[in-house]
Image 1 (cartoon, rainbow, N blue to C red):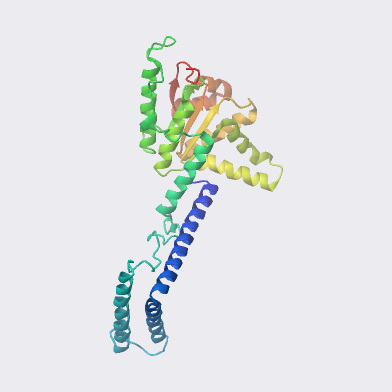
Image 2: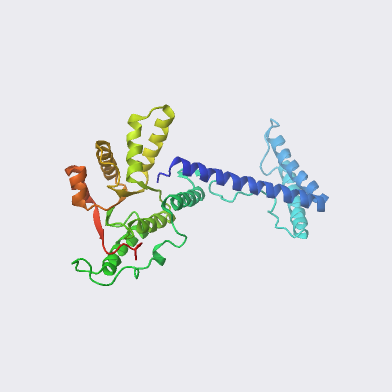
Amino acid sequence: MAYEADIVRRAVARLERRRDNRERRRFQLERELYARCPRLREVDAALRGTMADLALLAAGGKPVAADGPEIAAIRARNEALQGERARLMGSLGCDPAALDGAPACPKCRDTGWVESGMCTCLKELCAQEQLKALTAVMHLAEDQDFDRLRLDVYSDRPWGGQDRSPREKMGQVVQVCEGYARQFPRYPLQNLLLSGGTGLGKTYLSGCVAREVTRRGFSVAYDSAGNIFDALSARRFSRSPEEERQAREAARRYLNCDLLILDDLGSEQDLPSARSSLYELVNSRLQAGQHTIISSNLSTQDIGNRYGAQIGSRLAGLYRELTFYGDDLRLR
């Protein structure tokens, strides 16, 4: 999974703040307990001394048997001090390990990384940071998820000669989208095209999918078609190294994320660069086996007419079109 660099940076910063806060709390508790029980300070110093004694024996140059008398004496002294320390901590109303500074995550020891890559503790923080970013850009409501989604806002009366009412049709659309999100990335459908007029809930439903896929620990990128196409084009036409760097970072985000939600296709300027950017995006993600949701007022056929037969054929063959229809909910 490829979280964007800024998401990872914010998650790592949170992990470091947590680690620093735990260490400050441990140090403050240590000061308080030493003030209440000076003997505890002496015992802790003596315990550190036994570790130093072992190190001196190992560095002494002569062989020392693991079961020899020197090590046995140090071990006995250490165990006696550990017992006294446990009694002192208990008398102070504290767990004996309260001052040990054990990491919150034993797998990565609070670094966020293990041999196989990102630790689960850092992945969880990345998911939280990603949800914050999606909430801001998609204007996600606190209760915007499949469990609270209401179909009764759609009319149950026949509409526009369709064989199903808008409510019945949306029931089917929601069923597909919910399965797609909750089983991501193993749902039988890899790519979706949400098509239909304005105010029918395409962006809202995309937000429900984004929230659920994020909860499942996958990277999600959302943006309007215009912004995405501008970023892809800016790599070739940047006016400064910094502008090019930012454009490349944005392009990597759109091209490499586990799920890309491209919103409002067709609302951007009808330029050759938009057609080439859409082709690059669709083709690259299909070849990489990555998942994409496109939201548009255009149907698959309309998209083919506007952006070219190559795009139209890819969408027709490899995207499942889910059609929205009915009255504009914002007007209702």
